[in-house]
Length: 307
Image 1 (cartoon, rainbow, N blue to C red):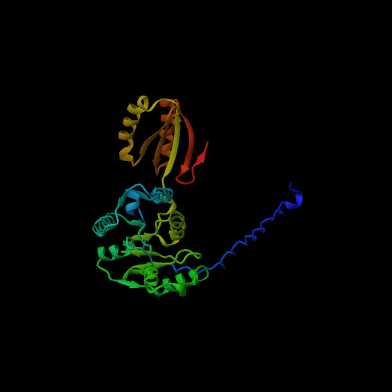
Image 2 (cartoon, rainbow, N blue to C red; image 1 turned 60 degrees about the vertical axis):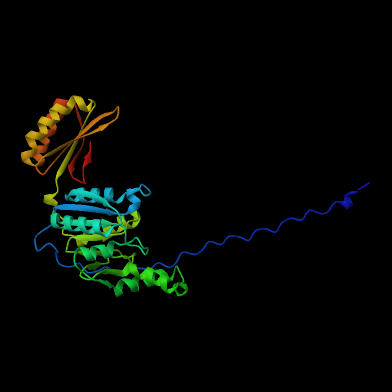
């Protein structure tokens, strides 16, 4: 007959070692580039823009493009008219054709994507080809990249192939302006032909760098920014379509744009955009009366006051 003494003692497993969080790397900051002369010429400013999104991952649905939306809002709030947004694959021929065409047509063009260290990151080389330029390493960019990275990675352990891949991110078209627009980033915006600005595809970086680029752009003066009035009606879009069509045709010669944006089962918001605030208020009253509408916002684009 067994006794309690025959039962082996329970051995508690050793307590796991406490997880010590890795300290954040020291914050590294860099000076911004000085602001160069107006690339469009003294007294000129940006009126039109184009956006070129580069990457197979956008076209095959793997990645959802957010940057074109960010860019469109940025331009709209500043009174810049975005005329075209295109997506092209990681193919030099497509990038070259689209970049040349957009630069010939618009005052401000951006590309997004394709500037990393991997084999399919061909934006810099494709744009160098587009504008007949060589590729050259930028020493300032390499120095900033190295300073930023050394607190996060042991760069001495990289193979020659890995080092070459990393340095590709500092290999730019030879005649490009290299603009370091953000104190906390080593990545510059490279501007070609005074118009085309090259951005990364990562949305957080794209947004931060686009905001940082603003002081380097010949932006429209406040007087050039249009007003926008928004009127909401509960009527269906089909019922108000004849009136809006007539209104749009009548006011187009005045430079006024009429838009309608339905919200399922809620109604329609009518947009009036133009530079003449007095005239917009007259049209606003007309729309309110004809459509039994309510003014929901009005004011300078980007500064509209809700009612």
